[in-house]
Amino acid sequence: MTIKTWHTIGGITAISAVTVLLQIPSFTWPHSATLSLIAGVAALVCMAVSCILASRWHVVEELYGGLDRIYETHKWLGIWALLFATYHFVFKAKMGLWELAPIMELSNYWTRMLRQLSLVALGFIVILALNRNIPYQVWRWWHKLSGPLFLIVILHWLSFESPITLDSSAGIWLAVTCTLGMVAALYKLLLYQFLAPGGSYKIVAVTQMHGSVQLELAPIGKGFPFQAGQFGFLSIQEKGLREPHPFSIASCYSENGNIRFVIRSLGDYTQKLYEQAKVGMLAEVKAPHGRFKRIPHAEKEIWIGAGVGITPFISWLKDREIGHFERVNLIYCFEPSRAFPTLERVQELSGQAAVQLIPNPSGSDALENTLAAAAQTTRPEHIQLSFCGPKGLLSHVKKLMEKYGIPTQNIHYELFEFR
Image 1 (cartoon, rainbow, N blue to C red):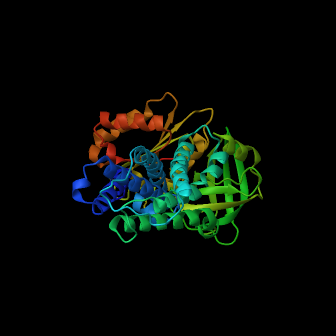
Image 2 (cartoon, helix red, strand yellow):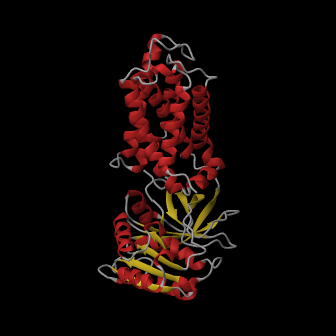
């Protein structure tokens, strides 16, 4: 069982409430000040856990079932932290019936200043994270301020008069989560570049077609092992291309360590990559990430790749570890004038793996017909779908699953939105 977003937020809220209630007299529980204090604790813990999730530690990725799910939870933690903090600042978290004292003594000026800055800092972090109009390269550098801004919020907690002491249940809860959060933030800001798994590579082949580019990279020294369907953060060591971006690996692990990426020109960075990538350029790849793997015991598998979303399935076609390709239908959804890899190339790879390929060019009903036929020949609950493509098509596929009685929990996909 993997941890979900609501597990995280619900658990933080529940533990924060219980640890705070243990610190104050029970007859003061039904009071707005109590709720404000709980909200303040929950907001700070949400920020701490958000920093932990942003660290890209593999143990955390394993718990959440993939980096895509981590970033979804990371986003919602920021939203809930802002909601909790807003309530905490609007309603006073003090009562005369409580024994109040700050953990760290500061002057009244700095105590008030930290209180005001902490809400501004949190609001800045969340608004920055949710504003998609900010160019990625600008957003990425501003987002690095999240760690220092988190420290401001911690200082507000320490200088704020409250019934929470460091050796109390709420104090221990905050101390542990904030310490882990700061360690994670420092790791991501200062050590990730040096300690994260991955490797150094050189581009050895570049293929361009229909606004997409395929890069083949050879390791400089030792590469890294990965599983078919995983992705990595690619950074080309050239001016304007150094920003790390996530791309699916379009190959399976081989002895020479070479890896391939198929990248469509969809934004400023990918357009630059399409135009400027050359053989001989050096690159850094931080990987592997992701849990987009085949369902090993499925009776019937349907793979749906749309456009460049065919990439992880190319790596699956080349991976012979699980086998059982006779149970697979691969549906390739593409725009004929922009298809890359070409239909002929996907047909070649499918033929080599003995996988049945169903081309689904724009306007075709092949996708629906395939699901309908599969539901007639196989019990719907035994059909497993793996999907990689745009959200609109994902919604359409889920509607078709409902139409033909295939449980919607039988679809496996990754969320490729990291902002």
